[in-house]
Length: 319
Image (cartoon, rainbow, N blue to C red; front, side, top):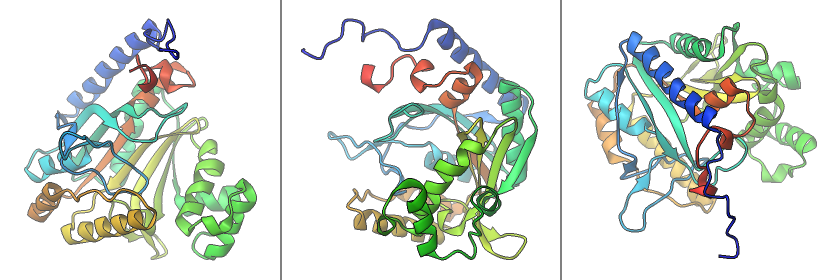
């Protein structure tokens, strides 16, 4: 009881912010209703979490279940069952994600568009942002292009050692502690992201093929392998992450195995693979693009506030 604070039962968000949150939920639902995209609900409890080494799920002690980190897997099962275009507003949970723009429990907006190209989905995300935040120019950049512009680095020719040394020089992390991908992520998040979305809606696409996650890998204009995915930014904040969705179940299995091997090397928990998703993929996922958007962050931008706790009633420390 020594840590008890008399006022810690109170919400961290003002009533006006909670009212704005309710209004934004209505705006989002109306946006998709006008486009005939079906709202769905999928379980918050899952038999298997994501394998992504960068994301850790909460597990239950009483049952072999996990709080889902994204509704992606279950929504893809609906897509494989013939749902057509769908969206979901739901809670998601991720371990170790706390801070000014993070909370272990947060609200995610995720939607899938069968038959859409990646550019069509980018345009739709920008249309939603326009409805909420007002009109701005839309700019689409290639991942390698922003590295060239901000850091004068050619990602397709720079050697791993030189890239790690650059990250070390700029951020003080020993080059021996970095891989190529971790150096890229560090430089992108700390040096490039803050410059994006200033006076515009910035979208960065064609990520390195090694960072495809559950996106397809294709070729850029020069015939080089790139991940067919994008991220969207507003005022230096990452807001959306979209994929041209992988459809090959065998390739998905290989990526799961790669993730689990990396998790084992890094001493992380190695969770089970989602057999339901693999079965749905084998049955046939339609050609589609999908995107996850941080609803809480969108509200932060709409209200012009700096902390996630200002737009959610009770962050985890007051749960």
